[in-house]
Length: 237
Image (cartoon, rainbow, N blue to C red; front, side, top):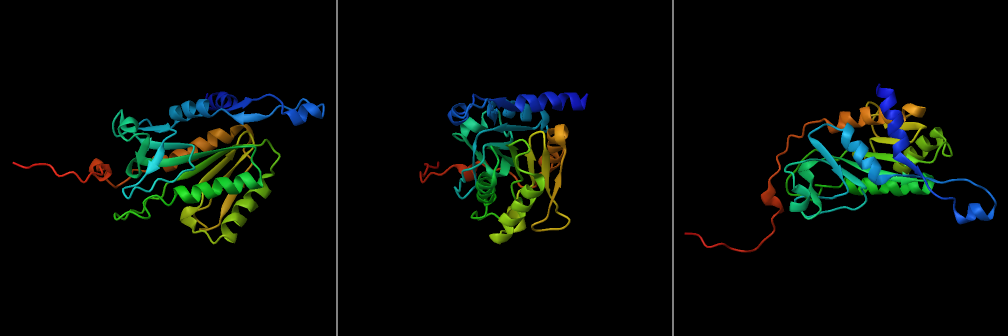
């Protein structure tokens, strides 16, 4: 049952696009595959913990810092209209994860995605209120088997080591559709990752592992007053 569900899940996640002009010129019929972002959001929404939601919102913390880069934010729905209430932003205290999508994964697009993750993980770093929660970050990418897993793993490690990036700013999971996953190895610490060639089971394992991060209960409280910025003084009687 579970394998059947995720098999359909994988087929819905990637969509074929028309051949590029370059390919047509060369006389080939190669069809590009791109991640169906809207479809993926709906599918992810159905497999994450029921008290969470996912949408293309902008994260923000109490200091007003709002990093760009995440394609989707996974968050606790404080109230049904929280996204409208916040004008398309989602407060740091409600965030449980960030999702990054990469079409045509290659060395340059990998580095760009990892850079986006480092930026998003700076949330709450400049806030007066200290909190140890660092936003778990996940990548879903597509490239078939054009980017060998061993090379992908080594490039992830080299990216972090060459830039002396702290372990807390590293990604948690990277899934290459229908090929494999890269998992951060917390037991070995900074710069340690494991690559698994999971094939058709990739999204099943990605979802299971991602939910282990999403299901962690946050111990900080959300105070809406922190996000109301006004110098107005009200008359008191």
